[in-house]
Length: 310
Ligand SMILES: NC(=O)c1ccc[n+]([C@@H]2O[C@H](COP(=O)([O-])OP(=O)(O)OC[C@H]3O[C@@H](n4cnc5c(N)ncnc54)[C@H](OP(=O)(O)O)[C@@H]3O)[C@@H](O)[C@H]2O)c1
Image (tube, rainbow, N blue to C red; front, side, top):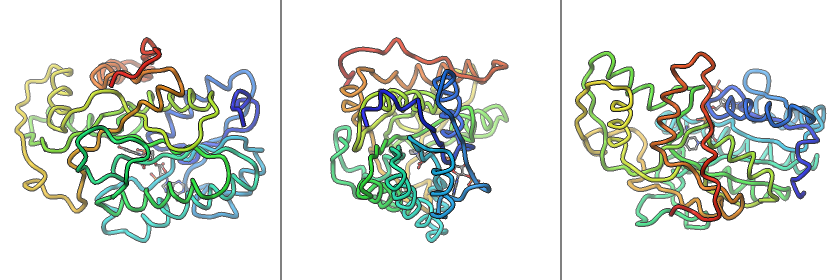
């Protein structure tokens, strides 16, 4: 498919009530306003593990594009609920990809920086060796491999450290603690790229406008530790909260996380001619938007350029 005409058929978003799913629904509503039809599904009306139900939905809605934002995203929960993680993150993407191949729809699927082990010293390229440290990472890696080998047209978009207006996220967790005057202690030895969910949703539209297939990385540009991110959140909110640094060892969690999981987004820029906005700008736009009645984030389109920032 050259996806120039992708807006003329049915577009189905799975996981449409999640943080990213809701942003996708918003940007797609705008984009499809003059033609194609948009359909969003989530639990309980559609379980992506149910292949028969998925196939029926795609047929009924004449899907030309299926965007799978459904996942089991509780990284620590995946360690204890391994069967659920395997079903939703590992096996269901294959079920969806096979249904897409049968009906001739292109599938867009999301994966994570947590497929890497974090021992790298430069941003990870899409083809770099995966070596997940957690059940979440392992099951997401299994899911993306299944999508790529299902035989249909597919695009896997890896991203990291998502925050968005439509879901629980790190920014709101830090603000809630800071506003309540609670002590804040944040890990300073995990480096990644915070990514605004609405910027990712717009990136997906740009990618659909190309004939991109395979694996692409999209994050906001720049990198920081969770401690740096927390400091920037508190500064943006003009809160006078003291934040102390801690380590992954001192703040032990059930799931191991990579120490360094910055993703190289140059393939995204080559495909779309767009450079991701810096994460600090994305955070500022988020902070402005969370206080406005419409609660939608202004896009940062001034980043259109021919080259990557990295
Ligand atoms: N959040 C991050 O920091 C991050 C980072 C890197 C990559 N990603 C990836 O980005 C994608 C979107 O993440 P997100 O943060 O938007 O996730 P999210 O907010 O947790 O949304 C996931 C949605 O999928 C639904 N869902 C779960 N199991 C399902 C099933 N069996 N059938 C149908 N729907 C199901 C969830 O419903 P319930 O809420 O009812 O379970 C939820 O509405 C995922 O692929 C995730 O792995 C996320």
